[in-house]
View (cartoon, rainbow, N blue to C red):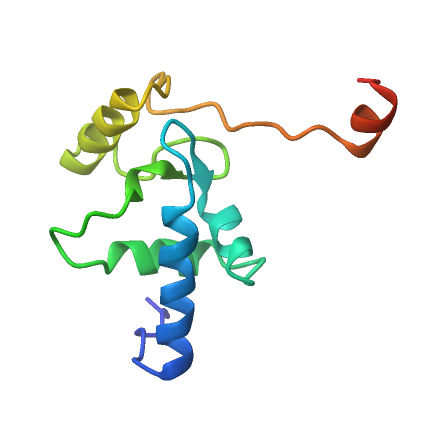
Amino acid sequence: MGETAMVATPEADAALTELIAQLQAVPAGTVISYGALAARCGRPRGARWAARCLAQLPDGHRLPWHRVVRADGRIAFPVGSTGYKRQCQLLRKEGVKVDRGRVQIAVRPSLDQLIFGVD
């Protein structure tokens, strides 16, 4: 409730095109959060936008939607649902370890770690 419907405008089409391009750039065997995907599209606080876009993709599309998870690494579908089971299956097929609906999100090193090798 309170969500606005996605309206077809040139700007919305361009944003969706960018989201699809960024989604296709996520390598097999890795995952990205909804927020990180949105940030790559120039929407740093757009996690919900990214989730809505993915939810509205037509049936039968061949995009790697299963590589997108919540920021904490959890699968967004309700546990036991068809979508949950399918996402787990697809991620495992790519070699991603899924433990009780959660995957390990890669942690990027800090600048200090990169420069000085400190933890």
